[in-house]
Length: 246
Image 1 (tube, rainbow, N blue to C red):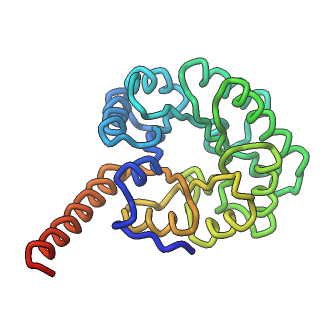
Image 2: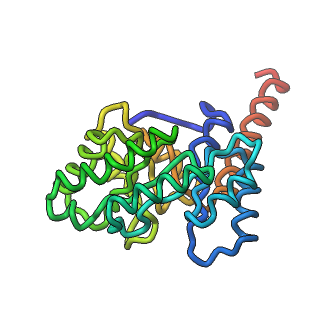
């Protein structure tokens, strides 16, 4: 596990780990716009919005460095493959460039490897044709160790860029054990996204040490304000030491 402390990180490094999550079903249009404005202000990696909100997010984030992401087959993963492909293509037409798709959980638990591989690959091929990346959500809470490993391996075989822990709607989200297993199972080509439970800066740093490169977060403002506060405190301490002659 890598040692990572506040002193070794820049604000940009931390902010660009965050996909600001706007997936709660009750969010109003005004709340989605406000969330996009927050993401723009804090210069995070992306927002992840519901499919119906992609056009709203694309307009709100136009000209910023924040990418528009959305979900496919969310949250159950049980849509037909053709439906997932249609969702992916429509989302890209409306401005999404990152797609978080849910694996077919029941088929994975049934060890139907060919079905799961084809399901993921179909979305990946559609996404890549449109210039987008894919993060595959395994929903680890419903899987045993063997099923998790199989899902991670199939994700890599299908050509996806990320494997992701969870939707945030299952009984549990990201765990350090699952993130470690993900990192040990897939090659360095595949990145890791933690979702569900990363609500503090310390939690973000902990998953980062394992090798996680993205987190889905709703507590974006609190995390990044904490980072700025701690970073400023370190700078003040260093200046005080210099002034005192030590």
